[in-house]
Length: 192
Ligand SMILES: C[S@@+](CC[C@H](N)C(=O)[O-])C[C@H]1O[C@@H](n2cnc3c(N)ncnc32)[C@H](O)[C@@H]1O
Image (cartoon, rainbow, N blue to C red):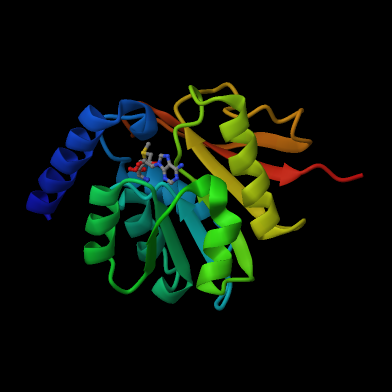
């Protein structure tokens, strides 16, 4: 357990040295943040939960511990080393190497049609607007009108341009036991 945590921190940090912008953090999320994200996740058996930016699996593990069936979990990770780690660590889940801005193509290739929640751990705050827009649009296309989109972030300022994207955003949870303290943002498509 302890060894695994150390290995994951090292892997995460090495990837941050290679690509700080796409990592957005130097260490993985805490168990407290993973639990908070899992508590906000809508899911029922047979419906998928999609996690964008799996990293070393801190949130993935929290989702599984919360009882989400591994068969119903799709984890998308851009970076090859992290993807390989996730694939080997969570063989019971679907793990794909891919770009979250192309989620529609990934879901099509996987034959996944029914998605209850999309969870993004992508570092949004310093990303270009076009990236944020693409991620949010793809996420809402995946979950449809009634679905839930979650984003965790270290910022109390909404990490996406919610008004421009016609999305209602609210802070669902604040997690002080994370480095740095984190917010779980919950989005819904604006009606009308
Ligand atoms: C802040 S880390 C979160 C990692 C992990 N979920 C956690 O909470 O510890 C962001 C992750 O998003 C991945 N990522 C960045 N851009 C991505 C993209 N366009 N598509 C998929 N994953 C991406 C990074 O490689 C990194 O693993």
